[in-house]
Length: 385
Length: 213
Image 1 (cartoon, rainbow over the protein chains, first blue to last red):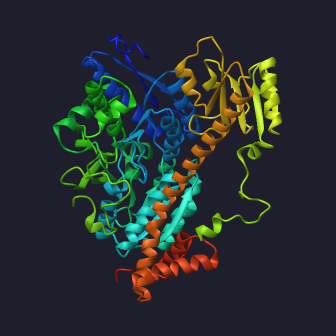
Image 2 (tube, rainbow over the protein chains, first blue to last red; image 1 turned 135 degrees about the vertical axis):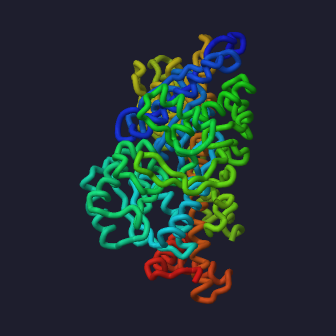
């Protein structure tokens, strides 16, 4: 470790932790691909300071505790200081004590519930002020104010719903039902829920169901003949990957808020989508998690180029304030919070499994994980749509 | 209030708390080292403080995770043998380091010990390592639980704010009175202010109350 400075052609070793098996693989596999694509691009362009990036990757198999054990192995046995990974909040919280105690750096490319700011994490997915607030306003204006919450039973959905409930109530809306299903839920588990929805007739179904179960929720909804034009499922987590898994016809008409959709306009995104399809096949889509996994590697490389060390203190100082022209638009790591300033968008799934962007922020929205600068009124959401 | 508390509760117990050495009594300890003169001295010293100590050797693949204090011989792969992940230790850890053979700084750091005990041992060195390990381990644990509570408080403050707004609107209470109401209810019911606030918010939600209209 100490002679890194002299061996200037030695590769930079970085950790990668995404579940490529198990119930979370439907989305984490795409995050793995986004990470890989960026690493290959960076290496093809000559690496960082003339040195290649070499990923050391493990598959935690969708088991949260395994993330902690692999993080330990990465940092202690593989002598890796920087780790890219995690989708669920449970897996992030499993890695957190390890990177905090051993002073590593975790790059977390997933939207989450906010209310955290670790000096050992760079957060590149959306915080609630970058998606929930704008989504709530749009849904209330377009469909009505009676919401039904359905989520997977773990930290993120419960915390995210706490924020959503608060925003909704502050604007005169109400929660008419709230259900949580096991992360391993099968399609049968959603039958009583869609029946309950059919009976209560909410204006909107707000879903924080993640992973494979997403497919079962949307299919159960379609099976009982509910109409997305009148009562859509709105989500922060259903991306192009989940829509492809459930079938384009099943997903059509439902709403998602995200910083990125494959369908957004712009040359940077076109190039990104083309390179992704060339590498992983023409029938796969990019999505918000691919994009975050991809741009965070480039942000990292940009900071590493200046720091020329993987030492967490030096590298993090370089990362803060760094801007990168990402497929979603220019993004910056906010020096106050270590969270990326991201774009807010709302999309509606179309017949070809892509999202038509129906609203978008004028510029990147400052990350505010503790919702300090926001009242609870959606009128203050983001920088206006 | 503070003055009263600082005064001794009774003449029988002047300090009102256990001394450090009294706190050692009945703690469990595991010593992972060959049973030579040195380890015997360590075992005797711990027993002298009325700790329940046992010695284990050869070094197991996984260090036992059920003791209050673990004394463990240094080895380069010590971190891997620990049953917990770094940052989530369940026992205070003292690493025993050899007198002359070189050790690796990274390996020692990865094991995140709370204290070290260098060979050859002396009674003073044993006591020092024990004091340091217990107090550092306890302090780290208290800081972690403090952070957990702060996180929780941060979230519950938002609930209290909403309950306050509901009370101000429905009961025409001024702000300070609304806070006072929540606090009194919490004390009467022996629950937290945030639990009372959550109950207020939930019940108004059930009744379809809308604070804006």
